Length: 85
Image (cartoon, rainbow, N blue to C red; front, side, top):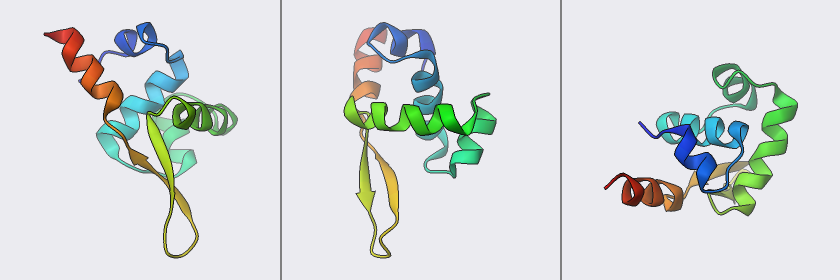
């Protein structure tokens, strides 16, 4: 499991760290699920997701039905594992 403190040390906020770890472990969920399992509210999650995209932690992808979702980018995970070794 990734330590949220390491993510915070490389520039993510506390909420961004929680969301990143949740999505990394659980893939994509509805905003309400993310909020529930990260002890956040939906407004915080909606605010943090664009920042995660900006920091290249995830990217926004539009599927064939025109709905957007987040696709994992393992950049931060690689940094975590490099710091761990």
